[in-house]
Image 1 (tube, one colour):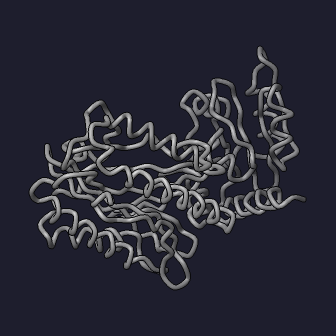
Image 2: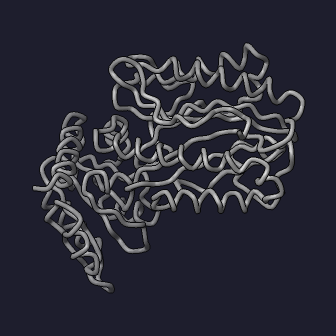
Length: 372
């Protein structure tokens, strides 16, 4: 058995154990991070029925026949039951449900399962009780294994390298459009070894930076513009994600430096609050409290962070009301921000991992607002 097979076998056993512990009979997975997590098979969703059905004792794929060899090459799960175009795939699903003894039990459906397929399963098995796969998978995926932590560290280092290179553009960035700079960031990420960008790159210059999830447009970067740069590259399926706010040349607008120092202090307070046993909301409170004390509380418009792993955004979410206790292996962002409407935005973000004694920072690129 290869190391990869051993990894996915271990995850599959953990999934089955959690099903048993929670009194759940099975789970139906769709092409998604959950399916990859326990099987090693990765595919994009399509209009064809492609499921992985896992019970407490068994696992089987339902797949179009054209995927048979591909699944067998990628996954340790040997039971792959196929259907041809023109046949009814739900007949194959029915066979597995009967074979696995799931006909009148409780089955979880992948949170990413399209409505079309959800209705197919619910209509075919009216006696089943249904829930969401996150009931099992959030807990499994929140604590990263050593393989995952290695990939996240590599992705963070890649993002750091590109961050430093982009910062060195200095005055050369003046006159570039946000879109041009976003294209340059993607080019640099791929040149450094990324498979792709983790998400559509954010380059928010001047007033556009006051929109937290603005992407990029045709506005030219001007002297004195604070520019919010939020990006990352994917390596082996694991994304990087960091945010820096940079003034490439010139003097920033009035109030910017005060806002920047407040965000940096909030960021450090959030990171300092990370340790095993504290609740996720405590990290949010630590960062938010600093901004409130400095008069920027109403301009912090989002949660302090999000988990990261096979997805850029996943549990645990670092937000008020989340009482999840942090534990070693959890990886998430700390990213407070201040957004001054029609003027500028400031955000600083790193990825951290909870350790036995506190936390490990995965990013170490410069956090100065000055480009050089």
